[in-house]
Length: 212
Image (cartoon, rainbow, N blue to C red):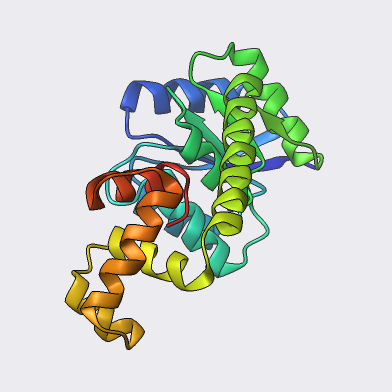
């Protein structure tokens, strides 16, 4: 049985090259070639292909946005994310969204074919270095978040999240049903516990550790 494949890349030369590569394979049927994320989403819904090979950086919708929409549609299509470079956070988000393959555009053509066949057969094809870094980063964040939750009280964590979202002391006081003076006391305690000296430093501290 042929593998039904939809290709999506906003670079015409790359898209044409992928089409020619996979058309030469007798067991692969290229159903559509898309140049933006919205086209890719609609093609996936219409054709319900076995595999969607999806560029990460595209107009209309980027690869991660398409993945989120596909998840809502609950389609059986397996997604291979194609990209020139990978950001750790993007890799983690893609894995959370159920992507089955992550490949770099510099990969040899024959390996792309192997990737499609492996994912179709139920396997995964993940770019080891990037995925390894991303998972290491995730584990580090989880450890740091756990440490923060041991250092701060639930009330202090709630307050910190509000600070990171840009709430003023007055708005925090209204949100937590406390006085502005109490907010200042809590903030002073948080600064001491986390060894930061300002709201900006606190916000960066929390953002870097993925608490928000």
